[in-house]
Length: 630
Image: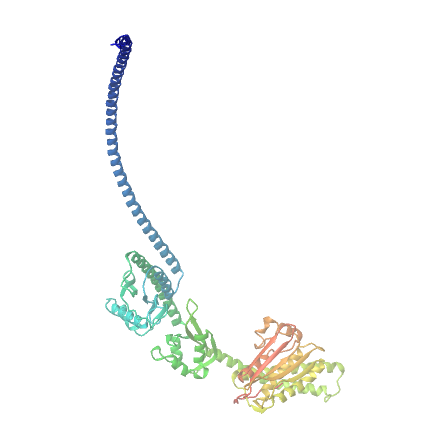
C-alpha cells in the first residue's frame, strides 16, 4: 500500500513518453508512407522506362537479327566470290604457266630456226635439231634416217644416245626401225632398208656400254616430210614405259616440222649444185675422175673415157693404179685423202698422148676431206710444139757452133801473131771479139744442154769417183779466177767416210763448177770469202754446200731463181753477161739423179747453195749426146 502514491506520480511521465513515442511512430509511418508513394511512383516510372527500353531493345534485337541475316548472306556471297577468285587465280596461274611454256617453245623454235638458217650440211642440221630434242624431251636413244643426196649412199643414218645403252639395245632398236620401214607404202623407205643394213650408223652422245642390261620399252616415230614428200623418219626409243607427254608433243612436232623444212631446203640446194657440178664436169675437155674417201669412183667424165678407152661401168681406182703404176698414183691419192695435199705430175703418157696430171683433195663446207679428184690435162700439142722448139734450138745451136768455133780459132791465131804483127788497138779489138765469142760459145753449149736434158736425149754414164777429189779439182780450176779477184776460197771436209760414188763426172762437175763460179763472180773483190763444205748426212746421202758473202738473192727473186733464163736484178747490175741457164741446168741434173738442190740467202748477206745426193749414185741412161762443156 505504501508504494502506491509513488506509482501515482510517475504515470504521467510515462504516458508522456509513450505518447511522444506514438507521435514519433506516426510521423515515421507517414514518412514511410510518403516514401512508399515515392517508391511506387519511381517504380511506375521505371516500369515505363523498362517497357520502353524493352521495346527499344526488342526493336534493336530484331534489327540486329536482320543485320545478322544480311551479314550471313553477305558472308556467303563473299565466300562465293572468294571461291570464284581462287578458282580464277588457279586458272590464271595455269594459263600463265601454259603461256610461259608456249613462250619457251616459241623461243626455242625461233632459236632452232636461226641456228639452221646458215647451215649448209644435212648432217649438221641433224646434230643441231638433236640438241633441242635432248634439251626438251626425255628418251634413251634417237635414230635418224634421212635422205641426203650429198651422201654416196643417199642416206644419213645417225644414232644419238642420251643414256648409256648396250650394242644389243641399239641392234634391237634398229630391227624395230627396219620392220617399221618395211610396213610403209613409200618405196624409198623400203629401199633404205637395204642401205642401213650395210652401213654402220654414226654414234653421238654417251658411248655404248655393253654392261647395261636395259631393253627398249617403247618406240615413237615421226615422219620428216614436206607436201607429201618423205625426207626421212625419226625413231625415239624409251627404256621406260613412260613416253612423251601431251605438253612435250606439240614442241616435238614443231621441231620435226622445222627440221623437215631445213632438210628440204638443203636437198634442193644440193641437188641443184650436184646437177651444175655434174654438168660442168661432163662438159670439161680435161679428163676428170672423182672418188670418195673409200677410193671408190663416183664420177668419170666422157673426156677421160675418150683418153683411156675405159668406161665408167668397168673401171675402178685399182685399174688406174695399175695403168699408172710407175708414177706412184696410189701414194698421191692417200696423201690427198689423209693429209689434204695436192700432187702434180708433169707428164703421163697414155695411148701415145701426153697428159699433165693433178691429184687434189675435195672438201665439204666444213673443210673436211670427203674425197678427191684426178684431172688429166692433154698437153700433147704443147709437147709437140716444145719438141719442135727443142729441135729448132738444137739445130740452130749446132749451126752456130761451127762459125763460132772458126771465129774463136782465127781470133786466137791473130792474137798470137800467127797472121802477122798487130798493133795495140787491133789487139784490143781482137780481145773483145774473142771474149764475145767465148760468151756465145757458152750460151750455145748451155742451150744444147737444156735441149738434151728436156728432151731426154742426154746420156748419163756414171763411174765410181771420189767426190772429195772431184770437188778439190773443181776448186783448183776456179782458184785463178778467185785470185784474180783477190778472194779466198777454201774446202772443208766434214764427212767421216764417204765411199766412192757412182756419178757422171761431166754432169756433176757442171753443177758444182757453176755454183763455185757464181759464188766467186757475185762476191766482192778483195773481201770475198767462198767455202765449199762436204758432209755426210747418213748412210744414204751426202751434202755439198757452197757459201759466199756476196750480193745475195732478193726475197722477191728467190722463188724464180731456178727458172730458165731468169736472173735477179742485182745479179744483172753486178755482172752484165749471163744466160740465166746455169742454175736451171743444175737443178735439172740434180733432180733427175734423185738428189735435191736448195739455197738460203738474203740480199747483201751472201748465199748458201746446198746439193744433197744419194750415196748409191746416179743411174745409167742411154742418150744421143753427153753434156756440152764450155
